[in-house]
Length: 120
Image (tube, one colour):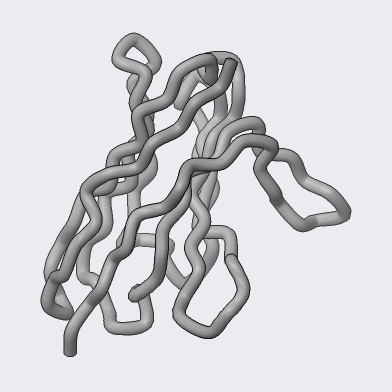
């Protein structure tokens, strides 16, 4: 049974850093990723990581600022966010079993989300 629980969200000033964690069980063979939902907008894809952590993918808006990693032994997925911008403000969700449907990624399993607020 897959279970996901995010932590590490909070309030940070623009230019600062934050690391999100996702405690995951039953996910070691799945590609995983992060999504976010800005206020008043639809949920959007942030990036993903292969099941063994050797391959990552990021959307252009976070490339070079965000880093996804995972520790399968600890059952944890991470999102390291640097040089944060106000437009990064969103509820961040971790997801497991990432699948691409006609170029659009989605997850089969979801956490409850954690709020990240970046002040200007």
